[in-house]
Image (cartoon, rainbow, N blue to C red; front, side, top):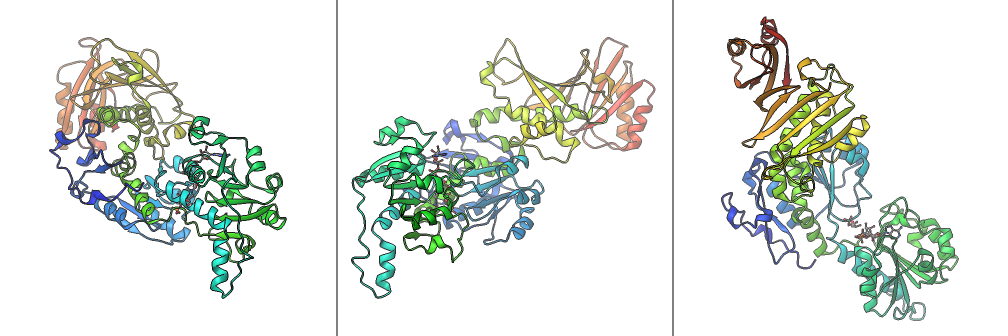
Length: 603
Ligand SMILES: NC(=O)c1ccc[n+]([C@@H]2O[C@H](COP(=O)([O-])OP(=O)(O)OC[C@H]3O[C@@H](n4cnc5c(N)ncnc54)[C@H](O)[C@@H]3O)[C@@H](O)[C@H]2O)c1
Ligand SMILES: O=C(O)[C@H](O)COP(=O)(O)O
C-alpha cells in the first residue's frame, strides 16, 4: 500500500462536460449532478470527480475517531465533517440523529442503540480499518444502513507489527529495554530464542496472516497454517502447508493469530487448547483479544505451557491497569498499534473514500437513498436501470394504496417483461424498490436494498418474481414491470384484474416512468406528482368536468388518459396532478354522476 498517496487533492475536478475524457467503464451521471470517477492507471483507486459545488446539500459525516489529516481534508470537500472524538455512548446516540454517515475505527461501539437513535438518517457506517466486530451488523441491516470497511488499508502494517512482536518477544526487547532504563545490565536474564528453523503456526491465512507467513519464511521459519476457508494452493504458492487446528497447535513453536473475532473463533485458545500445545510455545496476537481466553492464557503462562506472549489486542480495550496478563513478566504488550503506521493511517481513510467501491457506497448513499443500492454493479447498468428503479418503487406505492385498508398484504407477484436474456437483468434492485414502495406507505420502516428482503420477511411479505421474455430489440433493459397483490380487496374495484389480484403495470417512456395499466384497463399517465383514478361510464365531457373541478382549485393537471373496454362502456380515467386536491374537490369529483368510483393516490 506504499503506493497509495493523497494525490487527489492536487487533481482538479473534471468538468461536467468532460465525459469524453472518462473511461466509459466509469462514466456515469448521478443524481444531484454528481459525476464519478476516473481511473488512474498508475494508482489503484478511483477519484471522486464531483466538485464541492455539485453538492447542494452536503451530508453530515460524524468522524468519531482520529484519522489521517489528508483523508479528512478530502472528506471535507464533499461533506460536512464533524470530528468528535471520545464520545460517550450517550453522546454518540444523541449526535447520530443529525448524521448521514459515521466513520469509526475499532474504539467505537456501533451497537443497536446507535442505529435506533439515528431515526433512519444514518445511511452508512464506514469502518476505517478491517475489523467490524465493533459494529452490530444485524442492527445495521435492519435499519437499512450500509457498513463499509477498508479491508486492505492496514494489512501490511498489521503484518509488520506481528513480525515486530514476534522478534521482540523472542529476544525480550521490551523487558530488556525497561531493565536497562531502570539502571540494570542483565545480559544473562534476557537470553532469547532464535526464530530460524522454528515452526510458526499462522492461525487465519487471510490478508494479514499470509503476509506474516511470507515474512516469517524470509526469516527462515518453517510456516504452517490453519484456516478452514483458505485455498491450499494459495498457501502452497508461498511454501506454507495448511494443516488442521490440532496439528497446528501441537507442533508450533510460535503461534500467530490472524482470524476475525466471530462466534466460532471466540476464546479459540482456552484451557483445553493450551493443554494440547507444545510446552514452551510462544504466542503473538494482533487479531482480536477475544480469540484468546485471557484468564486461561495467564494460567498457561504460569504453568509454563506458554513461554511468552506478545499481545496487541485485548478483550477489553484498554485493559485494566492491574490486569494479570498485561503485568505478566513474560508478556509483551502494545496498545492496539497494528494499524498505526503513518502510511496505514493515510491509506485507511483514502481506502475508505477513494477505493473504487467506497465513494459509491458512501457518498452516493448519503446523497440519494435510491442509489443506496448501486454498490455492486457496473455503473452503466445502474444508470440504465435508474428510471426502472423509480418505476418499481412507484408501482409498489400505487399497488399498496389500492388495497382496502392498506394492510394484509402478504403475497406480491412481480413480472418483468424484457427482450434481454434472463442473465442480463439483475432484478434485486428493482425488487428492493418495489418492497420499499409497498412497505413504506403503510409503516414507519425505512426500506432500502440493505434491509428490503429482511424487512419483507419480517412482515411476512412474500415477493415472487417472474420473467416474461419478449422478442425484439434488447436495447432497453425492460419493456414493463407488473405488480400484482393477491388475496386482498381493493378500494378501487377496477384495479382488480380478471384473475382477482390488484394489478398495476408500468413502462418507462422517454426516461420517465408511466403507469400503463390498472386492473384490465389500459391507461397512460406519467408517474409524477399524484394520480386520481376514476371509473366512469364512457361519455363525452368527462375530462372537462373533472378538469374544471381541479382547475377551480388551481390544481395543475399534468396528464390525463382514458382507458376503456369499448365505446360508451366502462372506462378508467387516470389524471396526473401536481398538487394534492382538497377534500372538497375530491368529494365533488365523486359526485359527478357518471363517476362510479375514484381514488386519489400519492406517489
Ligand atoms: N491489530 C490491528 O491493529 C489489526 C490490524 C488489521 C487487522 N487486524 C485483525 O486481524 C484479523 C485478520 O485480518 P485480515 O485483514 O487478515 O482478515 P481476513 O478476513 O483477510 O483474514 C481472516 C482469515 O481468518 C480465517 N478464519 C476464519 N475463521 C477461522 C477459524 N476458525 N480458524 C482459522 N482461521 C479462520 C478466514 O478464512 C480468513 O482467511 C482480523 O481480526 C482483523 O480485525 C488487526
Ligand atoms: O481491524 C483493524 O483494522 C485493526 O484492528 C485496526 O483498528 P484501528 O483502526 O482501531 O487501529
